Structure formats: structure tokens, C-alpha cells
Amino acid sequence: MNKVIVITGGTSGIGLACAKYLISKNYQVIITGRNQESLQKALNELGEKAAGYVSDTSILSDIDTLVNQIKENHGTIDGLFVNAGIFKSISFEDTNEVLFDETMNINFKGAFFTVQKFIPLLKNPSSVVLNTSIAVFKAFPNASIYSASKAALEAIAKVLNLELAQKGIRVNVVSPGVTHTPIQKKSGMTDEAIDGLLQHFSETSPIGRVVLPEDIAPVVEFLVSDNSLVLRNEKIVVDGGSTL
Ligand SMILES: NC(=O)c1ccc[n+]([C@@H]2O[C@H](COP(=O)([O-])OP(=O)(O)OC[C@H]3O[C@@H](n4cnc5c(N)ncnc54)[C@H](OP(=O)(O)O)[C@@H]3O)[C@@H](O)[C@H]2O)c1
Image (tube, rainbow, N blue to C red; front, top):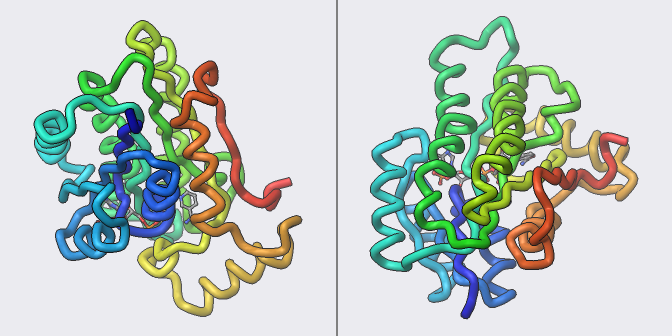
């Protein structure tokens, strides 16, 4: 039987690349996104091996609805890639409560309750993969709340591995470096600033180019596959060596 993997935020960037890769490896993939239009566009690209649901990860009742829909239409699942996330480029001094809450509600609170609410659907054994960031251990200006949201997410992986062990659920982390995706444009950075960031990482990284979503996908596939059955709280940094 093909494994069934849920990817939150599968309409774009890393989530979409993972969905494509997993489908190419015969997984059945279920993606989520916030709006019907981008969800449908992604589903058209992915073809009939993918299903998708509109669900805002920062709204707990949306997660409940999503879990019920997946239970009804697909049954239990083998893996959950907690990927939905945002980045807003904003200085510490300018970060207001609205931006603070938006980032924490999507990147941490939403991720926290997504894992919690999917527990009844996760098989024994199954795999949860949390998408964090090198921003947890490397400082980037204008990323204080983003770094904190991802650090919080990484912190729960340890605890979940103890609490969910009896259910056969393992939790590991993928920590991408600066990856060229639509997230930069959505962050409020200028085109010039984005070009500068990507150029800096292309020039200084040992791989001589910026990381692409397609670089992350095989790592996520490993973490949801049986090849990683004994891994617990492992963090795989996928950054082309840019933080060495
Ligand atoms: N790109 C990087 O440099 C980088 C580095 C490290 C970590 N990451 C992490 O990788 C993950 C994916 O980012 P990306 O770079 O692929 O960005 P992206 O292209 O903007 O993709 C983000 C995805 O998350 C979804 N999303 C955002 N808010 C959501 C919400 N409230 N509910 C449901 N879905 C939501 C988006 O869907 P819609 O907008 O269509 O609703 C989209 O599918 C994020 O967690 C990000 O923090 C990225």
C-alpha cells in the first residue's frame, strides 16, 4: 500500500516541491493551503495522486475540520509534514503585536495544534516532520519573531518524541537554509534586498548556489520513509553548507 502523507502549506515553494517528489516516489499526498485558487492551481500541477483541502493552520477549528475531512476521505495517514509558515521581514523595534501574533499563530501555535489534532489519524508507526529554519541557530536581522517561532517549534520535537513514543509516532526536523521560494517576495522585502540575499548565499555557500525547494524534498522523503524508522528528534540542516 502506498504511504499517505499530509503536507500543510503544499501550494507553493518547499511544500509543493515535496508533494511533487513524494508523488514521483508513489506516495499519496494530501496538501493544504489558505485559498482555493492557489490550492486548485497546485492540485492541477500535481495530478490525480494528490488531494487538497483549504485550511488555515492558524485557525484551530480549521484544523479540526481538516482532520475530519481526511479521516472521512482517506482514513489514517503515515506521515505529516508540518510545513505551512510565513516570514515577515521586520526589525525588532518595529515588530508590533499584530505581526507577532500572526507569525506565532501560523508558525508555532498552528504547527503545535496540527500535530496534536492529527494524532488519532497517525498510524503506528508514523512520522512527523517539522519544517524549522537555520534562523534558529544563525542570526538574521529583521527575523526576531520568525526565529523565535521556529525555535519554539524545534523545542517541542524532543518532548513529543517522549510523549508519543507509545503510539509509534516519531518526530524529526528539517532545517532549510535560505531557499529560493515565493516566501521572500511575500515577506515584504524589496526585489533589491531579495536579489542581494540570494546572491550573498550563492557566492558564500560551498555549493555555489542558493538552495532550491527541490533540494529539500528528498530529505523530507527520507524522514517520512521507513528508512528513518529509528530517528528521533534528528535535525537535518539542508543549507548547502552556508552556515559552516
Ligand atoms: N524559503 C526559505 O528560505 C525557508 C528557509 C527555512 C525554512 N522555511 C520554511 O519552509 C516553509 C515553507 O516555506 P516556503 O519557503 O516554501 O514559502 P512559500 O512558498 O510561501 O510557501 C508557504 C506555504 O505555506 C502556506 N501557508 C502560509 N500560511 C498558512 C496558513 N495560515 N495556513 C495554511 N497554509 C499556510 C502557503 O499557502 P497559501 O499562501 O497558498 O495559503 C504556502 O503553501 C515555511 O515554514 C518556512 O518558514 C523556508
